[in-house]
Image (cartoon, rainbow, N blue to C red; front, side, top):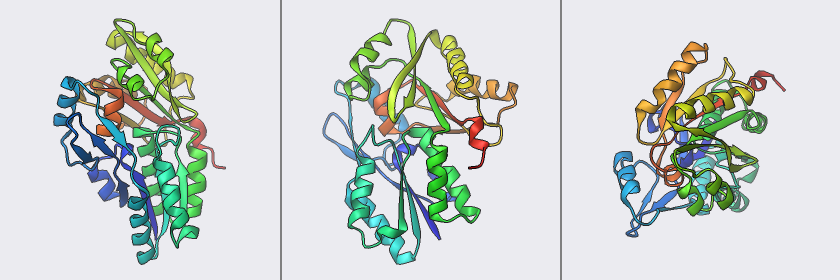
Length: 286
């Protein structure tokens, strides 16, 4: 059997992971009072975002230790499973490095296939769910990893954030870009390009942000009508309604929706939302 492992920045729901037999390795979050919790659902999103809105010091996030990955690899070895490990971009976190270190010391390395997704959040989740589908179709771990290496160049992530302060403070966005996107009333539009967060556009107000989001989607290849579409939010589910209407009106697939968890939420802040989709070239078989 093929075991699919992903880190918790994928922002998949526990129900999705359970139903698709996906194993999640949690990152951790440290609050301003020093409290550390695993990003495994142990803190409710409502409580976390309420804290994020009022805290004086931004929480910090930490990658999983190599030991956590090593434990997962040992479990796979005992079960006789091959392993596909999908991590958030190595340009944003040391999580991929932890997964690689654990694979190097495991007495099972030839059965472990590592994929640096070069993305994060719902785009990482989309790749992971697709990996589970390929596994259920009978593909080998090597075949799945090879296909993910191709598809990661064809999945796109765009998000609207209220401001860029958290990303700037956390070092995930260049200060100059943060300043450029920080004008009053402007809604920054972000993407992940070459494995790093990039400011791709700005819009006036929330209505303008939706227009910009859809325009960027169409400019970057349009969404496949055959592969899944994803939408996620931090603390305001109603923000997804215009996205759902747009997709329905343009005959796109109904989006899979999820909530952005504490790890990514720490960096993008409350009031954010985003989309991820496979472009039309993703349908072309290698």
